[in-house]
Amino acid sequence: MFRLYDTALKAVTEIEPSDGQVLKIYACGPTVYRTAHVGNLRTFLLTDLIVRAAELADFETFVVQNITDVGHLLNDSQDKLLQQASLEGKAALEIAAYYEEIFHQDLAHLNIIPADVYPHASETIELMLQLIKLLIEKDFAYIGKDGSVYFAAQKFADYGSLSGNRLENLKPGHRFGGEVDENKNFHADWALWKIAPDTRTELVWDSPWGKGFPGWHVECTAMSLHHLGQVVDVHTGGIDLRFPHHEDERAQSNAATGEEVVKHWVHAEHLLFEGRKMAKSTGNVVLLSDVIEKGYDPLALRLAFMQSRYRTQLDMSWDVIKAAHIQIEKWRTKAQSANEEGFPLEYEKAFTAYVLEDLDTPRAISVIREAEKVLSESAFADFLIWADLFLGLDLDRAPKQVVVPQEVLDLVEIRSAARMNKDWAESDRVRDQIAALGFSVNDNPDGTEVLPL
Ligand code: AMP
Ligand code: ZN
Image 1: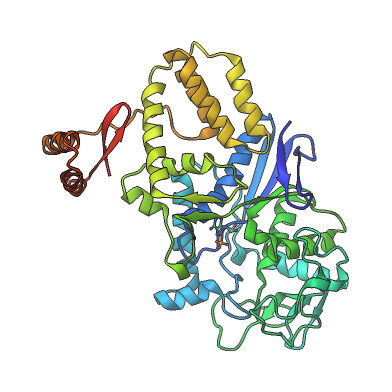
Image 2: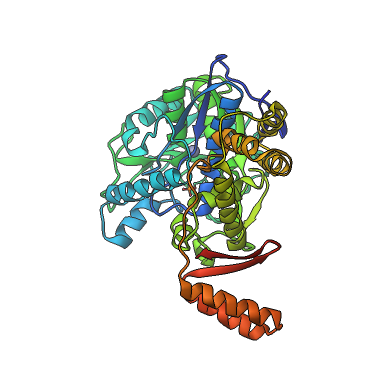
């Protein structure tokens, strides 16, 4: 049985395809106005882990992930993409195409299985217009004082059941830093279609209500209903999307169809880096390219993520990534002994059981560490190769053969001698010299290891 934590239920619950065959998954995708940071990538990995777990549970999957290339507003009127386009002096869709390409490359580096469909917001405008018309017809939406179309939150009685933010508790101006929007009938209403100011010349479309652009939440409702139909088995995203994005999306989808469209909402907790929130404003943004530049295998990040469960906040550090890099290389070396003779079934069962129990990847990895102590070389290697179908760490790849220059080896000897003499200052000085040559030294119980930085 495959179980996941459902945010709306606040409990771990059984996940199965509603149609008995194909698990339909909608994953909130990137807003392509900048390179996704490793926090974003942790969230995108969640969908991949669900897809791989579904395979262990013998379900097929169909995944839709949107590319937001319009409509993600910074505040009431500033589109993130347009702002970046003007900063870089490029056309908005040029910016979008550039960052989308990096997004796909990053996913590939992390062995994240691509979605089946990647619809673009800018190419889905017609679907969004149809949805907005339907919501107006059903009296869930109205035209505000500025001509924009808004969703009437009070018409959707169940508003707040996903995030716990009931309408009576929402203060006016909660959406935009305390600023009250006079164009709406009620402070918790949100824009489905915004009429564009005359100054906006890019990313605007004709509509029955005038030239404008869609609200962000509309995109996900329109795309999921179009590509997955009225049943979405699992909807994923980062925990910050629970409100307002997913609360609003749920209201739109359910209002449009009269059904509970999303069966299970599954959210990834945030990633911190060295104790701090990952945000541009705090100067604490780490990209996958930074990981690669430091000489680490990008899959070290994947392993480092999987060492914690997706719904615990994770404080990542360079030390953890480095340790994961070393671990992968060791496992790759051991996996070379695979001979397809097999391994005891109990390990497969234990590993699968942890994965299927709400993606308990840390415990699944502990099964590998246990097997490493007990199994023969070839049985362990076979187990690694099998487990890698889920882990996605390319363990069948030959470990990197790194040639350590003699100069570095000599310095390592000098450092070891200094350490023997407890001359820590000298040892640190030599370590810096070694680092300047592009290598790191790690002292562990098996001796001193030299790795490329
Ligand atoms: P965005 O491109 O800003 O829409 O974000 C893409 C995804 O990353 C969304 O699902 C966010 O919830 C998620 N996200 C944003 N910040 C973090 C973080 N620090 N850790 C994990 N996920 C995040
Ligand atoms: Zn979304």
